[in-house]
Image 1 (cartoon, one colour):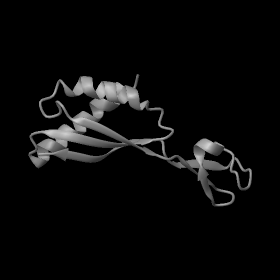
Image 2 (cartoon, rainbow, N blue to C red):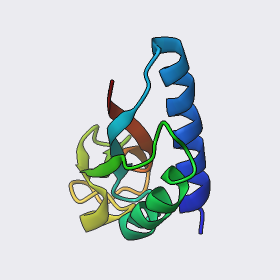
Image 3 (cartoon, rainbow, N blue to C red):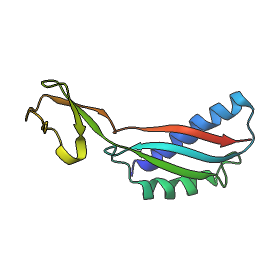
Image 4 (spheres, rainbow, N blue to C red):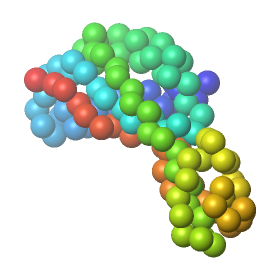
Length: 114
């Protein structure tokens, strides 16, 4: 379960931001989670609840996740398309000369704190 490692990394990053910005309590964190990131949102939420209880700064904070659609680019025809629907083969020119543009990462979008 790599979600726990992701949660630890996010909390560490937020703690660093909180120290720099002199924040005392985080109430909500919004994450952007890529559609093909292999992160399971339910596992992420369970890990979040458990890990946040161990931090005065994070205890009781809400986790919100927004899905970022996966988009693939075709180098042959220059078009983009939905990765999940068509996978590696371009639906416009049937090329396999494609690569993922977005939708495989996890990043912090917002931190709500005082």
